[in-house]
Length: 346
Image (cartoon, rainbow, N blue to C red):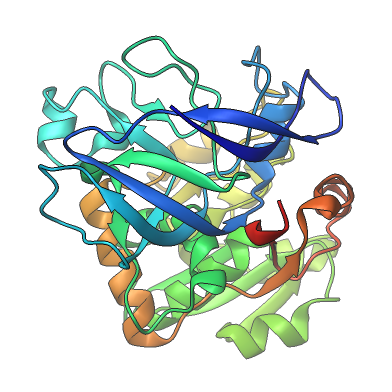
């Protein structure tokens, strides 16, 4: 075992504090990663504060991990010491079920093992990226291309793949009108990726205060959802609406913005249930859907795509001592657009 410094929530809703954790010894197929940067995702806050249900404490959040390989097990073939690598939201799965075999490990029928707030196959709790080092099986590690700096690449391991996967699945591309609902950590990457895929991108945001940013990042149009005229003007407009919002929405209003056969896809996960009038999907043969992250192969594809198109996350680099303040600022939508921890400060 190796002892490393980390930031952990000792209990639900408690401030995160510096501590130490044990990392396992490097096994045959393991990669030891010296973490350089870790993104702060809204889901870190949901879990550290038990917004999504009972959690495991102490909790070391962080599933947007970018670093450098420090050591490899004797059986590792994919990586070598010095490689730039990333770890996203999962560190294992059953590897045998229909979904795992199909490269959809995120939907493992036996349940994928989360990077943190989960139990591994030995029943040991997993600890995430707000730490100095992590040991991960090479099969759940991805390569960060040379064209991507590690700090702006870190958020791609969640925010990037969480938007890339549904945009690809629902065929965002030339001739398609895509709306990104919410211009935050996920939303700003959704704008960049949808635009790079060739779609005509519209941002739907509560206000117009980020309009200049949205247009700069690749949106062709930007509307305020607080303006009732938006819903009249855009009725029946979109092929895909990707919702990155983690607050409950009036789904019926948003479904009215879809074309016939359009899809409203949720990647934001509110803590409360939402209401729906089923006529909103029956009229127009519309789809109300959800999407998780992506499989390992698709995550690598996303990173390569982002490197090819020069798409990094827009970040605000912080020290570990600022994590608790950053959580409050995320909740206040006061970040453009992703906090990233410089883990050298842990």
